[in-house]
Length: 166
Image (cartoon, rainbow, N blue to C red; front, top):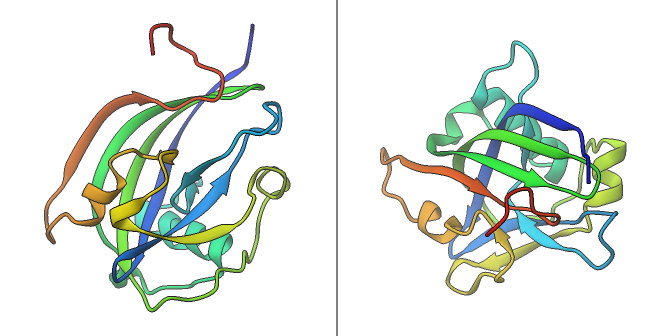
């Protein structure tokens, strides 16, 4: 199967309210029944810094606008390969954290692709996350003490795997 490859830098936000974290239900329209949970976030635009991208993505996907200094971090970094039914994306992701009062997420500005893929939002307890959360280390990242940083290395999270043996 030949799929186009793309590379980009991404900024993601671990948005917590006490013992809960806000997650988006994502899917691959080319794989019926697929669904996994992710933190708000996405690609960094040309000329945009990581913190600004994290703030923008959080607002676009949840409706929440936070001040730049409310974001802690980055708290983690990884290079992730996402194999989907129609493409492969290799993304250097930088994670920030923000603690907020619980709110009802309402997307403010989704792209056409996001409207097709995203299936909603939900608050999940950090001590009982669903098994299909990307990144798998989310609970640990949410609990990192201020000022700590974790490099998660190179990983693959795919609906249609790119590498064999994973």
